Length: 468
Image (cartoon, rainbow, N blue to C red):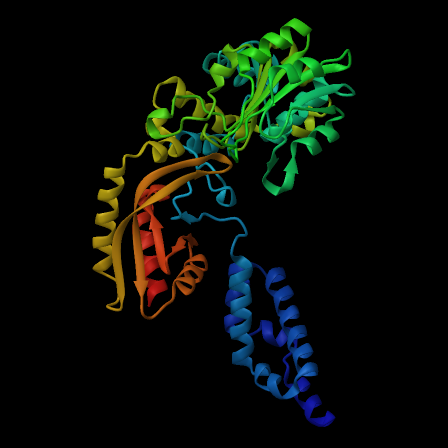
């Protein structure tokens, strides 16, 4: 293309003010604000100019006003979609880390709504009319449920481990079994967290076997702590061994050192009737003589993201005084959601009120009935080239919890001659709201265990659009 012809194409590009005067663009300004629209118009016109420079022939049609308005509308719509939004989790992974782990109970949601728009007594003692500690509102509940002397809350369990080590073992040795030097999500490892805390790692035992004598022989005058770490996201089988908590507690007492335990998922009630047999319960750890423990709030506890530290009063008091506590503390919304979650446990209603526990404890026959009803409703509205079936399968806990535990479930499987499973999956993710599913055996798989009943009509609509 000649330079003169290319210049003519450039001249056809409207000026920003001309573009903004168009009725369709004026509507966008009223909806989204002038500054937002102007910035998108400027970027669009710059991109069009760049396209003309690269490929004058191919970009010639893009300078038409209708084409420009269409491109602007697409960009404005994409720009107004929130980055963080609600998603329908149809994967059957209950604690889906990428989808935010534990959904909150109705009472926790109510607490968030009330506290977010009003003032609260976060650091104020209403009865005394004076300033108070931030965690005093939640401490009585934690003490009652966990059977501990004191407790505090930080923003996640990695922070809890860090605060324990930094406060109680900085500059001194901490004994950890080689089989417990775990890596958690995002490639964060116990040795790395320990190094940042200032504690000195002393590895003992072998990968598969660590004996009480290994700990005994490793204790020196520089030893501050024995740290026991529950391998939340993996299991070792076969020729393995490690001492029990009570044995380590007796050793720690006899040598005058601290025993700390990271129990991971925060299991408070007995979940063995539902197939979860190898997750330690918090109260059992406390009763076994552990000095200080920590666990997650957003895993098996079923609450908001938090790291809960519980144990002897003197240790919790020291952690509260650590200057880093201000960096790791949580806000009123987390305290409110956590308080409501713990209240469900105290009232004996955890299995029915906390979504994670309700999903875990849901019997297979209940899920089977839901799957059959869902499949029947789906068949009634799907196009004729789509096939729906119900088949047996497994749900998983996820979130780095119970790696060997599977929950028998019934799945809804979809097949279509018009759309491959990968295309269906992509369309569902791109919808509003986004839907996340599984693909197995070249079929689109829906596991209703992790779908809320009120989401099912929306899910059916989304599947119909994806299969067209």
